[in-house]
Length: 342
Image 1 (spheres, helix red, strand yellow):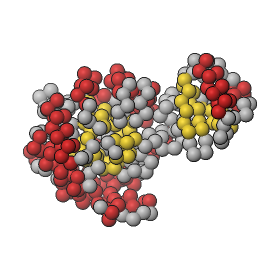
Image 2 (cartoon, helix red, strand yellow):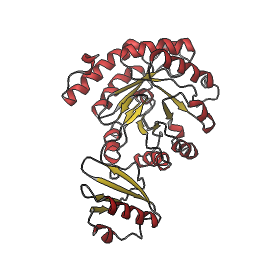
Image 3 (spheres, rainbow, N blue to C red):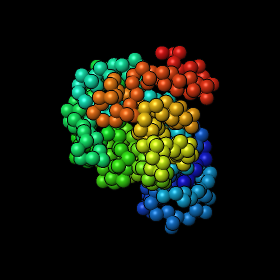
Image 4 (tube, rainbow, N blue to C red):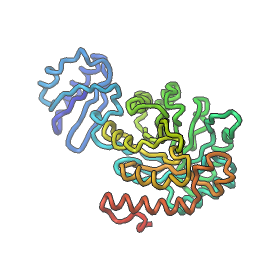
């Protein structure tokens, strides 16, 4: 249920209303906008008298929310949420470039690449240290050492970092990671999501390969219900009957999720494409659809990458794609080309 208050509500009446609602066993989440204050009621609201609440002087309207996700619902929070990652803001019309290799391979590799990516226009450095692989014989990442090397790259360049967590036991190792990534395989790892909800860390939540929009939002709800509002949604492709690409990139997910939720939405076309030649056109389509950020896999020598080489672009190709993305975003927004400001 959502209670929309009139402009500048009486503070004493507001406190009284919130106290009464909480006495009914309902959690109250307050969103204060420029002109309106919205109370989001979470819990069993079936016994609440809508007519009684609507009759209060400070109440503009009362609406029931049918969707099972509450905190992530745009009805609870009409304005776009903005999540800050190491000083970089994602959401509200942002245009963030997240880039890095499929995995951290060595300290020398990630530090050298980080410097190149910063010069190419990357805002956040992606550096997976733990890898969830289909085959147990594939490279699984460097683990704790990989995170240590990623921290070295962060100190060297000043870029905020992002890395994927694959198990709850790893959480204590991510203290120096600015953005914790929950991969598609863990979208339904509810114990992990609950634990991440107990932190205040920014979380990037990837859509599962067969998950619906509502299922993705319900996974985000697990994190937010624990008290952590800093969630970013990610479309990374879904499994269909088409074998030419690794997954089918669902560009419609971007505007749909933005209609349903106030959370930022980014896209990972590299994983969806599975082929480096398709990354740029899919990135442009995601930006045109309104994505708040693009994730791009970049490697200095893709042919010899320990993982994800076929879908990784070389730095010079990333630089050119970043320029095109900037021009496209500028054309859509009507602003001066962002690339001209750097």
